[in-house]
Length: 462
Image (cartoon, rainbow, N blue to C red; front, top):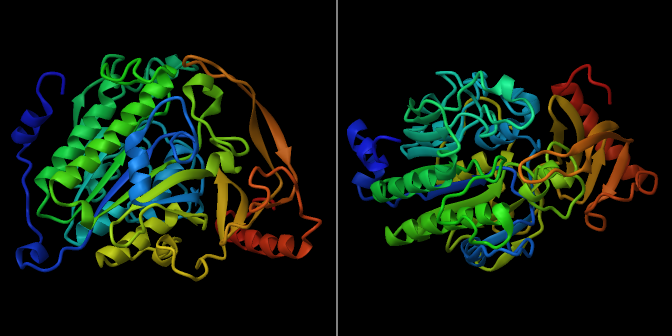
């Protein structure tokens, strides 16, 4: 990418367009899907979730044209585990993809299908442009996992020689930039990283244009705003709110470019747009981290870590200018989107369920009795399917003592929580343990938690 333009490279590798059988025959096309997944973005980083010193008009427009989901959860608030759950529809306890995987890691076992494979098998054109982070082996990178086109990083952008905490370790692994299964940049530098958001966006827009006549599945997992923060020159200093604000404005621009490409190619009305983050903010980085109103943050099972802002748009199906407080999770996206596409579910077991009625605001209960939460390999609790009650099993967790600044991390301490029940409707900040006040709720969720632990975490204390 340093020596040739993106368009020239695409021409050289011969990227083409193939119409699916349904499109050739003139049948009604199934919807397209665009998934925009940020990295470490705080719940309150965008309006209408929070007020900020920087402007994000494109995300606000997406919210006006779709539905804002205020109780959307990830099952683990760490990069690889969260991404694997989204793409596979499986909990970390099932796939054993936990934490944040290092370079050369095996990642998500191929026995667990990804959304890319589900949609590719259904005749969709598929692409991922951004941070992959669920496998860095030949059979676990995007080309082998159902994606016709791909570009980006195989793991987090801080896993490089400029790591603030352990550069000697990370410099063993040059941070590659990949495209369609080939290394395009052998080692990313400080001059390269400012282009990441632009490169991902340009690839996404180009993919949309070339596939206007095909049903497509487009996954854009941005590297930002994970530290180290970088933005292009066109946004540096633009926010007036520091580098984090500049980065968020560029991500907002990316959303706008993707939405404009859909509109200009006549695809807006037949495309599901999904916007969220893999987990809450990495608050140790202070002014280089996002904001959440909830307790704790990334790498904890409190809502500051596992509750992510979410917006979805699908004109004529999801009501514009709407807001939902009903709880659901990333694991539900695969079966829900497969239902819309008319695509068969994978043969391997999955944990997600079709929640389309919930997404569109129809009456009825969430099909899940509970959603589990974990941190790394430790199972830590459950929330009821309706999102009302959250039970923490006894476990340690990290809590911030002192924030860092300007790209340097701060300090954490280890705290412990005892068996605790929180009424999330009246206490979303998880401050008041009501386990003794509601013993029947505590007992019911404890039974569900024990069953989940025994099934997926045998031998782990409850």
